[in-house]
Image (cartoon, rainbow, N blue to C red; front, side):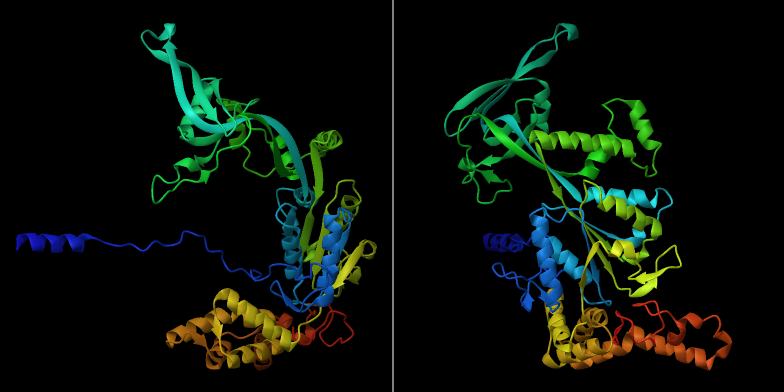
Length: 504
């Protein structure tokens, strides 16, 4: 009996844990569903429903032409303006262009209000973002020793200055490739790097001949069958000779070079440089002289064939927030020899240029507008809103029935697309409270009653003013008849405004 009870006890102690995936889940952002412009690779014409993009066929086709010009490096120093009412996909088009260009092409997004700072000038913020948008691809050939470690032996000798103690005089390391093997005699300072990276026999490493830098590439795939589960990365045995020439490609931006030269790191033990970095917590401006020196070095690299200049994209959203000083500075920056492609976006029609009394289209001075290619986005139709809501619901993991989807699309046509997209997750929570996985029309209707849209809120504010006339003067900005329309900076009754829509 004791043996059986012991066996039963031992079986109870055994636990089986489910292995969960360690893959990082990407947070669902406002434009997570947009994967590109959705253009045909041969004809470059936009498809109606491709890469998560719905509608705006003309704007997407124009953006595709701009992307082709950027890839062929014929668009540097020019500017594009995305103009249209709110919620028509201007930012989505810019992000889709970034997806089409790839990760290697610099893409720097910013908002027009970011230029206002109490620490640095407005023009300095603009120039920093300009330099962030210009990439430099440096190609360098290095002599390296690469192979599988077959021997790792530190050689010690007696140190006369420390009595009976010993010190490491050199390190013997053996490297093997498919073609042959070689034994190297390394400096003792490299031994510390080998210990930090936990390099042992069987690892594949490479050592730079000039700098002595050591990098572990992984474990040789010969040892891949030792265990059932491995936490290491296995790489094949290198081919060719142990000593070889390797081309190393590094992608940096001009702003990275500016920062590296403006704030040089002190050497180890340099207390003065350490204290100097602690005493400068504020953001400091980079001088024009330093940028000119960096440009001269970059030009030398380009002439020697070591580096290649890659003009990227600077995306400035809400460009009407810039003032006349910023626009004047943009003139000179766009005409400079090193300049990226600049994409502006705005939802304004006729309004004042910030810092002046001059009224201009889109809040941009007319002399700068003459140098800009303008891409117009149009309001979505109810069929396009239905398709966008469906794609967005799939991205957020919300299951909708046909009635709920139709009700949301009609609600989006009456209010705005952003409003109905924000109702998806609350409607899903209400459905879960009612023990349902699929969102119905009743859930959407209940959410619309709990969370009102901007148009309904404006009507409530106007009714409150009519009921309480004592607060008319203090709340006059809430009256739609007396306000400046957000799309054209004129009164809402002006029907001739080019950017005005009846839904937003």
